[in-house]
Each structure stands twice: as C-alpha cells, then as structure tokens.
Amino acid sequence: MAGALSPATTTLRLIKPFSATALRRLSLFHKPKTPLSISLPPFSSTAASVPQSRRAFCSVISSAITSGEATKTETLEKKVGEFRKKIKIVDIKGGPDEGLNLLGETVVVRGWVRTLRVQRSVTFIEVNDGSCLSNMQCVMSSDAEGYDQVESGLISTGASAWMQGTVVSSPGSKQKIELKVEKLITIGKSDPSFPIQKKRVSREFLRTKAHLRPRTNTFGAVARVRNALAYATHRFFQENGFVWISSPIVTAADCEGAGEQFCVTTLVPTSGEAGDSPVNAIPKTEDGLIDWSQDFFGKPAFLTVSGQLNAEAYATALTDVYTFGPTFRAENSNTSRHLAEFWMIEPELSFADLDDDMACAAAYLQYVVEYVLENCKEDMDFFNTWIEKGIIKRLSDVAEKNFVQLTYTDAVELLLKAKKNFEFPVQWGCDLQSEHERYITEEEFGGCPVIIRDYPKEIKPFYMRQNDDGKTVAAMDMLVPRVGELIGGSQREERLDYLEERLDELKLNKESFWWYLDLRRYGSVPHAGFGLGFERLVQFATGIENIRDAIPFPRTPGSAEF
Image 1 (cartoon, rainbow, N blue to C red):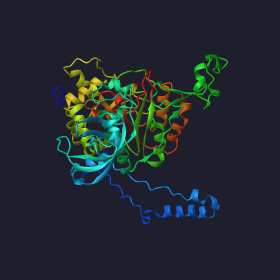
Image 2: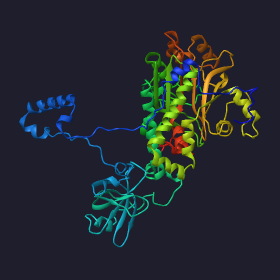
Image 3: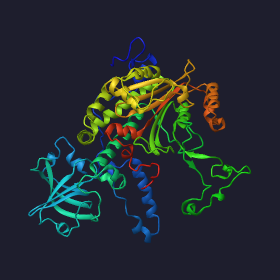
Image 4: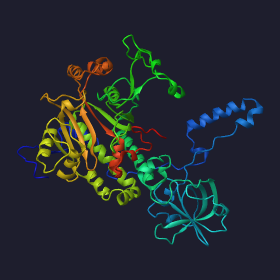
C-alpha cells in the first residue's frame, strides 16, 4: 500500500469482512470451488426418450390427422425431425486430447474457408465454424470427391463448405490432428472482393465491415467471451435466488436525471415519409410548444437509460431481482469509452444496505471472471498473446484478491497527495475521472479492485440514500485495473419525505415518478442495487481498448449502420 496514505488521516478497509448482516448476505454469493461445466443430455431417436407430455401432444395431432379428410392425410402426416446438436470443430479439437481420441473416425465439418493452399500433390484448406479459435486443417488430394471445385476456384477465402473425411494425426506442429477429406461440397461461394483476407487489417477498418468482422480471430474470440460472460451472469443470479425481469425500453422517466435521452415519438412521420415531412406538420399548442398530447403515448417518451426503477418495483414483491437488457444514452461523445446503445446488468436487493450491495457486486465480478478463465482458455490465451500481455494474471488477481474499500473523502486525500500531475484537478466534490480511478486501483493498490463509497450527494442521482451527515449518499463505485469504474451502485432512498425533497431540489417532475413514490408509501423496505455496463465488462475481460469493439454492432454519434 502506498506510503502516501497516512494511517492518521485515512481509514482503509478490505471489503471482507463486513458487518454481521453483510457477512450473512455474502455467504449467499459464493464462488464455485470446482470448475464450471455444462452437461448436455444425449440425443436419442428412440420414442422412449420423448417426454410424456410431448408424446401426448403428438398423439393428439395424430388423432386429428386420422379423423381428417383422407385426401389430406399424405400431406399432413409428415413428422418434424428430431433436433440434433451439430458436431462442431470445438467438439472435435476441444477436448484434453485435442482430437487424438477421434483418430480414424469419420466426421463432417461445416464452416467458412479461412485460407487455401494448393500444392502439387495436396491442397490444404483451413476451415472455421466459429465454435472455437482453432481452425480445422483439411487435407485434400486430387482424387477426393469434389476436388474439381478447388480447381474451378469455387473454394476460396470466405466461401462456406461441407467436408467429410477421416480424422488423422497431423505431422505439423500447429495442431495434433487434421481431416483427410474424402468429399467436399461448396455451400456458398465467395466473391473475390471478400475484404477479410489472411493479411492483418485495422480494427477501424473492421468497424466499417461489422457484418463480416466476427469471421476474424479477434472478434470471434470477443463474441465467445461475451457469450460466456452473459451465461455466467444469469447463472450467478439464478443460483443465488434472484428473479430475472424484463424492464421496459420505452419510458417517460429519466432515471439518471441527466437529460441525455433519445425521444420516442410518432409526431414525426415514420419510415419513408420522414424525409419529406415539413417541420410545421408537428402539432403545437397555442403557446407554440410541441403538443405531446397528440403523440402516441400522450406525453413525451424516451428510450430508457436504465431499468433500475422498474427493478425496484419488482424487488418490493420478489425480494431479489435483476435486469439484463439494452439501454440508451444520447450523449454526443465519440470517445473509446462511450456507446449510444449498450447493455446493462442491474440487480436490486430488498432488505439490504450498502454493505450487502458491495458484497454482491464483489462476488458477482469474481464469479464471472472465474467462469471465463475456466471455460474460455483458448480465447484468453489468444488475448494474452495478441491483445494485452498479462491479462490472465490481471483477471486472476481480481478473482483471488480481497477488494479494498475506502470512502470518497479518503480517495480525494490520496489523490491530492499523489506525486502525479492529473489532467483533471482533484478537489472534494468533484466527480472522479477515469485517470483518477485507474491511478487508485493500478498504482496505489497494485491491481487490487477498489470500492469507493459515500460520495457527495450533489454529483449523484436523486434515488440514492442520504447519509446522516447530510452531505453524502450511500453510493459506491467499483474500480478495476485498466478500466476504472466498472460497477456503480447505492443503497436506495426508501424514506418518502427524503425522496420527495430530493426530487424538488433537482427540479424533477414528481408526477412522472408517482408510481416510484408509491413504493415508499406501501411497505417500503431498505434496498440496494448496482449497475454494470456489460460492454465495459467485456472490455475488462478481453483487453479490447475501444468499447465499439466489445459489442457486435456499435451505435455511436453519426453511425447507425448495420
């Protein structure tokens, strides 16, 4: 711990242990002691494997068919085939033997051609199906069925193909097995203009080809890690008794009070008519203002910036809930840290205080990081080699180390004593910037995650619970290396009079929050929650620098392609 932190002036605590109440809550948010794995039931074509309810449903259909007109019987009696999991490259090469256990087996590989090398006696075709980073090297001789498609140029980089062959040992050093192709079928040929060839291209260029960039190693790996993080998120909350709820995307409330929302309206003509619509076609009141009463919802409506307020409503009935969905912010910012459309994870815990909130956030982050390290090893090795050297160690530290906790006041004192020139000056009452947050977690605490609590109420939203000092609120931000703030949360203001007073202070329309105030009238309880920008979590877990590369189709100022 840095010497700049004087024990006489600054109080530091580890996030563990908490108070007895928080410790009881923390026991719920356990980390798995054994590796996480997914086990799929075997597929079977026998009738005995069909669930009773499904067999009963099929018999009803069968009865209906036999009682129908005889002329229609032949058409109707066709059965839907049984769904079967495709064998993918990861199933062939992903085991501990890397495919050696399948030597001599006949398999079918479907995918997209990454590279093609035609030699005098043999042709090498690298195929990838997106299931893993590794390609399947397919070796084809001129006597194999379908080789004429290689000769004619149908098989080229970007083309999709079906190949059947035998798994054999590979003499090459890059893989242990390869596929000796016996039959090749071109499914979809690729035009010579295919923009993603073997040579490396910039990520800026790939953003202009967002529909094709998942075929690259980098973006395929990002997509798989993003998927793993989403799965682990649901798994963590489901295992700990949370109920997932769908919060609305269209709302009349501004959760953050920042006024940076996208307006949803039908007063402007839709689709093709919009380009030809005159401004004076928008209905106005006698005062010359927009007449929102004639709009679709009868009042101004916006794309949501957060599902938190709606989650709070369900938390007062179901105790612990979470939302996981898209949110929007009309912030005209073209930085590498901002998106106009992004996904948020927002749990709400009833009968909980700020200590419980921090315990949940710490346990959640460690859980999902552990899951990715255990289940995305090939992709993480790729990121460790090509994107950010040392990322595996950085993530392992987060999964294993205790979280440091300090107050906002202590954090400001620490920054003021730092022998570093910050771009943004520091003083009590300022909103900490990314450079301040990263300095604290990366330099002062050597890569440990840090939680800063008890922020000035003037820089935080209306719904945060006011502390007894009257100057701060029970808020917390979790800081992690390389990203800065990853999670922001608070204990919510459960006292009706305090909440109404705060809305008045910020000049927010209480009528828009009538239902939110009702939650304080009817059985209010102490409750807390946090929000996590999912794309920032993807950045944190992959080392990707620009947030536009952490989401499949980024929406930013001036860009809504694809």
